[in-house]
Image (cartoon, rainbow, N blue to C red; front, side):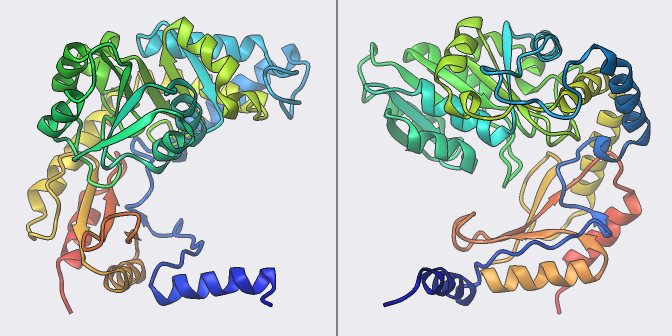
Length: 378
């Protein structure tokens, strides 16, 4: 009889033999081409000093300084978190918002609670794992449509009576290919077929919009979106997430979203830092402009047909096969570039790739050096 340890060990060995084993490797000393710190705020010293100064000023008004002491429904509701959620909702032109400890928790809590029995969820083929896990926990029927394929989606929508409640789940910017959802066309379909849109703005928040308030706001369709998720671990250079929507939606999540109900609330320092960062994100016009310039420069100089067609900060270099793409990533790390291989089954077999993310601090000479190294074949 195999021991529990042996069972786990054998599963790890099988993963290793298939080139799928993951490991924790620090690349912080290398040139950053893999983090989601799009505006460089996670490294911004002046913002760090402002966060500490604001929190020190706030301390005298806090009953707890170091920890939150519990969930918000038990002991950790505060005026500070209420003020942040109100400011965040106003910034994103929403009626209300609810703070979660991570984007993963926000997506799981949102999808699993609002997608209910006798309802149908139409989800893009390339949704993030957090959205997929939320769908797995929901009681709604799930239909997958081909990535960004409006005809496929409409054919699926037609299969259901108009009175059937329907949800369309998409992302503003997709995390693996860096392409965008056709949001205006999706709004037309949702109005035609009695559906509502759930939009993950993880890779758009802070980057798009007149003040970094997301792609939906940039396109002027925020009122057409039932729920938006903004995460703070990317362009904000922080951590956590909010769900944006009506006050009814937020009240519903407080009562039914299990990741919110049963999680310890963020610490007072974290909430204070988010409030300070919100003010900073709103004013980072130069950093957003610099990021856009870096994206255009990268696209202009990347010539190999192995590059994907993305026009966002997420760029992809396709190398088929887990072992080959991991070998190339290792070579690039040795050359001084912080990159990571994305392997099957995270992406479809044959579409393994090195995922490049650009930020406003990326230097043009480093972009050129990376492209040259990427496009050099041994």
